Amino acid sequence: MVNKLSNDDFYKTVFSEHDDSISLSLERDPLGLQPIWTSLGNKVFSGVTTSVATDIRNYTINLLHHAVVFSIKFDYPEVWSELRTESRKVGDNTITDSEVQNRLILALEMMLAYAAVKNDWSYSSGILGISSARKRWSSENHRDFTRINLKEVPRDPRKEDYDGFVTLLVRQSGLGINGRYKGPFKNMGLLDKNGDYPYNSGVWREVIALFNADPDYKKLLSRLTDFFVKDVREKSFELSLVETFEFIESYTEVFNQQYPITGQIELFWLEKLKISPGSLAKKIYDEIDSESDFESLAKVLFTNNCAIPEAKRICEVEPFLVLNEYLFAALIQKPKDITLHQNLENKIRFYAHSIKIEEEYTTRLRDLINVANSENISIGLINYHNKIATEREIHPWISDKEHVFKKTKYISDLDEMLKTMNENSTNIAWRRGYYLSSIKQIKLGFKGLSA
Image (cartoon, rainbow, N blue to C red; front, side):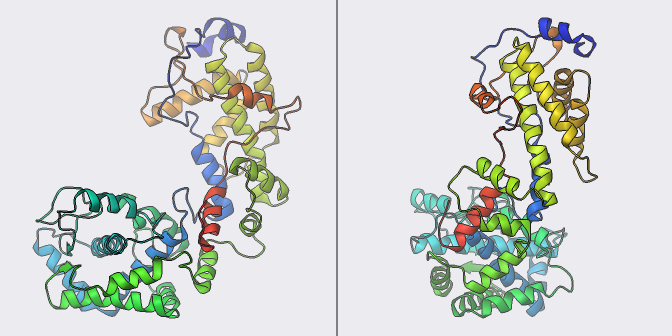
């Protein structure tokens, strides 16, 4: 076994010649570093954003849709009860409030897409679902996308018909607006851990008041709510989108413009995103206008604020993660360059000693630090990688079977990256942006721009 070899034997006998023909693995994080850096980034931005929740219009659309559903549930309880009862009649005896909520949200996203496609919006870029809806509208224009059955809106509609209906949106439950933004909404306290509205929370009354303060938003909120309430009271449960153009008109007035976010809504989001005066998140938010790549920008901004504990942790850990990636890449791509391996091991040891272990650090970071303190870091790193591969149920990139190592092109510009380091390891290029791209896109969204 590899871990029984001496250091010299390990370097001289284990590796085979590098094969450049082997292509990049589909797994892009062989050391499982994502939980480490996302944990550190979440400490800065309070876990209220993700790498896919970056469009402030999508945030606001989801907020509006949930305000509609909240209003139906709590202001029209008889309508809500009727929706649950009628849904049971089609065979689902276990339907919950959450399921009714999800069906209504999905129906609203279909209505939004219908309005955008029907009125050929000029400012639909970035709104989830619109691009694919537009393509489907064009390719299948003989199909009827105008009917929605509230009793049978599926959890995850596909292209096939259901009960004689076809949907303008597909896979919207997981990939749509609510699917992508539900996590941040939970972290903001807008939804509880089950995706329901927080019990006895006044936040949704605050949201409704926020929308009612603007005439266009107020009209859209009212029209959408009335649209559903009227349908249920008439017991049709089948919405015909061609029978009323009021909601199409209101959706268009509100969201088909470059600046759809009012000043009050912007203040609401800044508070929910924890971008508050005096916080590290606010400092980053104010200084994020540079055109640098996000990795370089992260290095500058967090280094400039390293007196703040959240920034200091990132400044300690990121170079350590990069060096482990370099060593792993070198073991694969430069198996005979023992001097390089040992040089990287020394740097890893140096940075590991500078990291102050804290209780909230992830298990993987602790494991990597233990590897850095072991006798042979290269052996330990390979064993660590094999553990990650086993957890993911994938083949390891390096296997000790018969002392022959499988190799892949992990870091294509390894030579160039290594040149950025000087002798005392102070010039290590960062490889993660720690959600800076998400925050910048959100900031640009308030200005009606995109990254």
